[in-house]
Length: 64
Image 1 (spheres, rainbow, N blue to C red):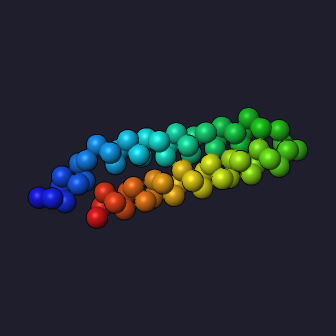
Image 2 (tube, rainbow, N blue to C red):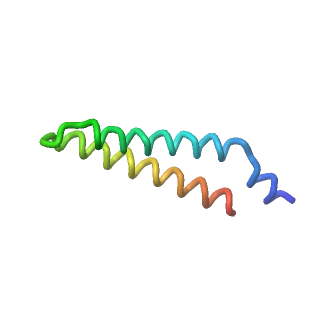
């Protein structure tokens, strides 16, 4: 029964929401930024990578 309680823990879903917001921020920066500026592209890629990593880590914690 502990695994069901762990899977239903509210903290996992709060972290997933934060990860999704970070990912959406990365997508927004990618399309809102200037085409010629590499800084927007770098920031967008980093935000997407961080968001995806947090989300994957949380999903695997839920599955565990």
